[in-house]
Image (tube, rainbow, N blue to C red; front, side):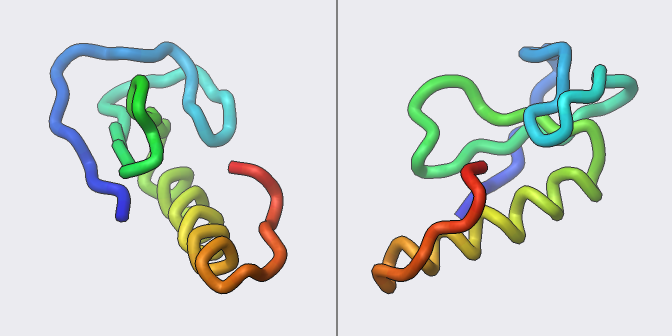
Length: 71
C-alpha cells in the first residue's frame, strides 16, 4: 500500500499523475513496487485518482484479471 513521505526537498518539477507544474506543497508517495524515486502529485485529488487506479490494478494482478490503463 502506498504511503506518504514528508520531504522538504522538491524532487520533481511536474506532477506524476497529470503532468502539471508543482506549486505549493506536493504530495510525495512511495509504494512497494517503486525502487527508484517516489511519485510526486500536485494535489490530494490527483493522488486520490492515482490510488483508485493503483488499488484496482493490484487487485486485478493478484486475481489474474484484466489490468486497467497503465499507471
